[in-house]
Each structure stands twice: as structure tokens, then as C-alpha cells.
Image (cartoon, rainbow, N blue to C red; front, side, top):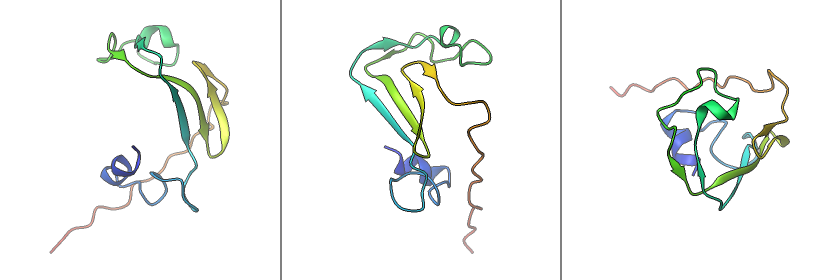
Length: 95
């Protein structure tokens, strides 16, 4: 589920697969339906989303960033600033 989006956004040099040399970011989902509500999450700066109200068949159980657990359910465990910007590769121009 991550390889094609990583290629699309030109991040596949560091993202998109669990292979040596790439970030080991993992999300574990559990089959429990939920309705997304951006305002109630506490993790949304603006408090709204065009996706509010959408029914999702899965719920995030936990997530790991570079091998370190950063969420448990809806609780964020990571300290602010834990993430880092990944620069996309330059677009190749074909002649």
C-alpha cells in the first residue's frame, strides 16, 4: 500500500518498502469501524476536514516511526519534532 504512493510523490528512495536503507514506518490497523471526526481527534490544527463524517472500516491500533512506537490507538506518544522532512527526488525531464 505504500510503494506506489512513494513513487508518485518521488519519495521511494527512502519510503515505500520495508527494505534495508529505507525508513521502517509501520501502521497496524484493526478491523473496527469508525467515523472520522477531525475536530475530536485533537491532532488537527484547523479542527475540520473534508473527510469528517466518512465511515472507515479500520481503526489505527499503533504506529512506529523508524522503529520507535509513536502512537497507541489515538494517543500520540512521540515528542514534538520527532518527524523529519524528506525531500522528494528531482523530477527527471525526458528530452
